[in-house]
Image (tube, rainbow, N blue to C red; front, side, top):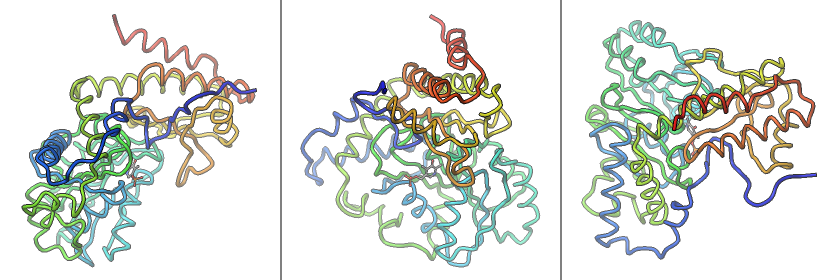
Length: 392
Ligand SMILES: *Cc1c(COP(=O)(O)O)cnc(C)c1O
């Protein structure tokens, strides 16, 4: 017997659910890519992306996913043989570093742990030890989408500053931008990147990069530059220079609408909504964990992300299959070191109370139907938290 019908509900950390307004914004003819309307659309997006990243620095829009934006950040500031430091906290900064290694960059990992966030003091100690300033850049993610760790980017920026080290600070905000605060300028970040399909509520296909003056200076002599990703080429006078070719017209309309929606809601409210719904998820997981089978992957509560929760369990396959096949809810699978040992509940982007409570209800139903030992009342705990926190 199944109780699924109609749309499947995606509770995976990207691509995320797109608002109907965003879908509708794409249902239109293409524009002349040389038209005033097109030029204005690009200008408005570049300005608003910089605003979203918390910077006055220049932003760039690539027709690419996050992996492409990673390559854009690296090729523009690094040369073959340069040394960089990758701050590990799960899968994603390591993956970014791997792209650099494949391009001939000397990559050192600052050993982390899949169960915790980056320790800023360890970053400071490593940079202080680099008295010759061989490290050219420090790479970190704000949220590691695999482990569910939330890294305190502001504190890491302070640690780099405290070490008096000139390395560029480069941050991946793919699983966090537009879901939680990001202050590029105030936090001492030189290069940041993100993508359209997670917190930004648009289709996959746009990669965003911002680079400040320090990064632009290093860019002048970077040896890995290639024509498509190149910041200087994209600064050319023609509109098509901005995309190194044809503009991704419909994706831009979608992203424009999604940004309008975020700004209409107001960013502090967007961040608060994410915090409330994430905490509701955590209340449910905490209750279920009492059964001794499920557990939070991230041990320290303050290091758990407001965009994705990674839950460890011995054999998640039946639970994932039940949620999908019987209820039409797609949960995230465990990836990397947690492959086959975890599931992930995404709560990023276009999420609201019925989506989150519905997802939690389906998971609790699956635990019951499959006879998986769990503490009762996870959904009730989530409701109690929201009922107390979201006042009339
Ligand atoms: C999803 C994700 C990426 C990769 O993005 P793709 O669009 O899948 O290439 C990079 N970093 C983080 C933190 C992510 O969550």
